[in-house]
Amino acid sequence: MNWVYIAVMAIVTYAVRVLPMTLIKKPIRNRFIRSFLYYVPYVTLSIMTFPAIVQATGYPLAGALALVVGIVVAWLGANLFTVAVSCCGVVLITEWIMHLL
Image (cartoon, rainbow, N blue to C red):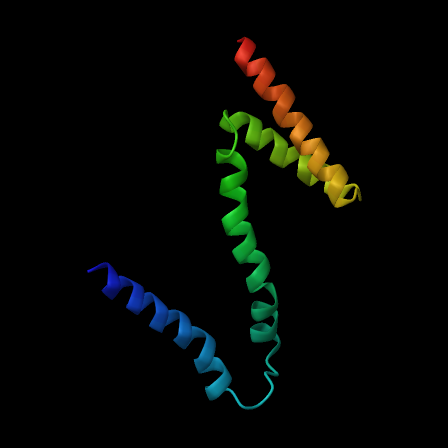
């Protein structure tokens, strides 16, 4: 039965990738559709990443605080390494404090 699920998943994945290439021959000129397609990868990455940030730590509070700190530090213009180190530091300190309580 698992092979049926895998086959359906493979067909759907293949169809989603091939059908647009075969059905749409002209360039897309609609601003709304172009804007929608532009942001799809960012939304997909966000949907997969944000829950993992909160659930990857021992305490969900540590993950949530790291997310907030990461957003603030990135907003202030820090590079990726600085954001990652800041988030790791917040998780380390928060989990240490929560472990003491």
